[in-house]
Length: 464
Image 1 (cartoon, one colour):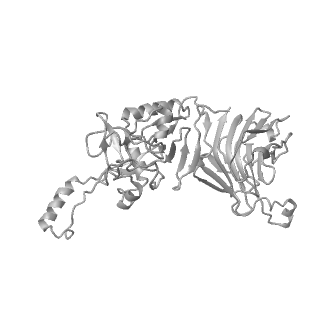
Image 2 (image 1 turned 90 degrees about the vertical axis):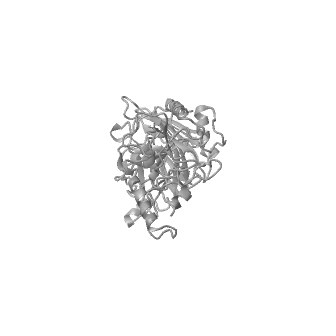
Image 3 (image 1 turned 120 degrees about the vertical axis):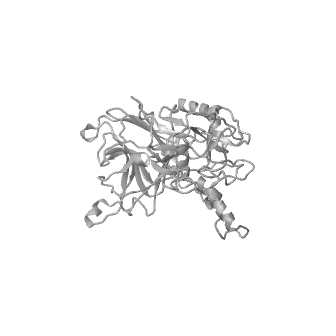
């Protein structure tokens, strides 16, 4: 089955701990949380006494006198709402997917798209918005751009950081993300291509407290590969149209949750804010959960103690797609319509063992199922795609692994306590340690070898 008009959500944490998302077009975004910064603070540098042997005291006094009137205290800018900023500038590959063209002078799918006017960027955004019912896209405002570029820095960027982060002083743009990201995981905020913002240029060196309502061009930020350190700063407040061949953009994504009667077509499953670790499950309450590079990793922590990672949202009728990679001798499962304590229909994940089998977790189900065709398509030690459909008050559940049908089961009755018809999606880390002689009666010590881990990626949920 092919999903249409869906945003494929791949959520992880960047190396800086910022939440990241990738949409269907392949554009990655990083969550920028609310905060504040000082905009336009400027202390013009001037030579101090003794710094230049060719200067007289009169020269030093004159330099100070000329510089001080241009000093600016700046003003506080508050970013009151979170937003998602493009992790990279929009690339030529992404542009072609949406626009079926490529205006760039320097060609390359992984290069930033360039030779783009402000109106061109708006047309791209318009078409992107038409394909995504769950989010809206736009250019960042200048203050949003600078806040994200600063990534918490109070002062302007240091020379050392410019050398590590900025794509400047070259004859052509470079592959997106070729240099070090800023502290929040955003790449190429400085250099590579100038970036359009949504604000009008006020014909001044710095922006005003209130964005201009009049102007002939829009603000450009960040400098380009053809620039130098003078423009490769957070503070540069430039106006279009620029050279054309070195002007591109990155975009902001926002949810449309404020729309009346809006129901998202998909739900993010790799968003740390949308997950929680169960504190009541018998598996344990301290599992190791790590988000990074589009992958969620589960381990025991401490060894012997497991747990369940649960979605905050509950689901009734849905289709779940997820790729799984599991080490040998670890025991996990995908929980369907789970309760907080982990009562659920479960698709087993255990190698060697019963991977793909259906049974109950903390309950006996009426009709278990066995993945008898698994060995036809299973890739040991590699990523394997699970697709699970669950519908109906009395559950009808179907599983495919790597496109091969494993089973299609309609239960004769609803097996949940109190007849629950919805629940959370969960990923399990099975407990294994036995801490007392009495526990030996149910010894699971061989179910999870030390250091073993299970990974999940490319999770998509379509509510039916």
